[in-house]
Length: 355
Image 1 (cartoon, rainbow, N blue to C red):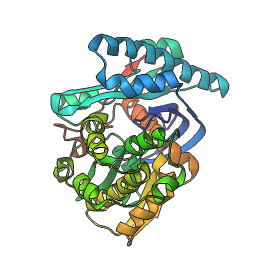
Image 2: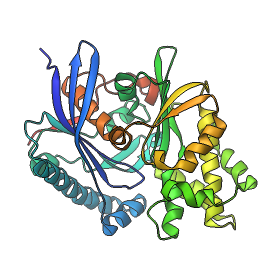
Image 3: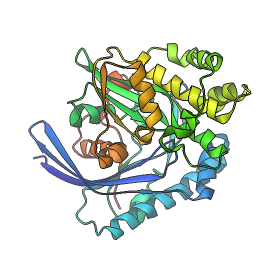
């Protein structure tokens, strides 16, 4: 007999490098209807040393990556352990952790999320469900995005669910199937330019707003081959490092103009990606705080209602859904959709480690 209620911690670290998101969540399922409540939640920022390691790890040797994985597993395990202690959390069913993506090359049958070594269970002292992407890639899928099954189960009231993180991804129902894919880079590029100005990010998009659109750069960005590809498709930091940033850096423009132009690019590609530009769209992730980006998207999508939820859902939706993915794995139920990733079949993904 399957349980009706689960208490877990969902853990997510995204490509925008905001830090480690932790959400203590209570799930309840009655019949096929799932409900959730986010209890405690917190984002633990990375030290400058860790930020530098995670930014440059895409160029690490195999030996360096092995050591990084061990070190990050120790770091992440202790972050989770401290969160449990601080909030006096007891009687957990599991900690459901995504880890941090360093390499994502599904076309080569490879994806690497560090922080998913078995030692994490000993450090935390709890059941750990983790490493959700590898199995999907082995089944011929993109290994991403994984959040859409959570969109279907928890956020079915919305026509579209859009996450604006390091990259943007969208999910929606089409002819009875959940469709989802990465649209474009977002904070991986915007934060790169904010960092050049000595800032962590562009607050409300005010710096970008002060710039102007360079139509030639916008056209070149819009013509990148990724945007013409059919879904399923996904993006990794390699795309930003080898294609997007070299293109943008080839233009002798102010940082303000580059950021302004890139926001117009994000908005345009978001509109281009949607099959129907009416209805409503739930927007989450750090980019939802970028007022200029949302206004630019609304300009391209005048008939679509853009909905930004409460702060906990906005900031911790991905951690929340990885919590759900872990629960579904514990229940041996499907937690990855082949219609989204392109894998050979729907499946129940992740590894379970016991302390």
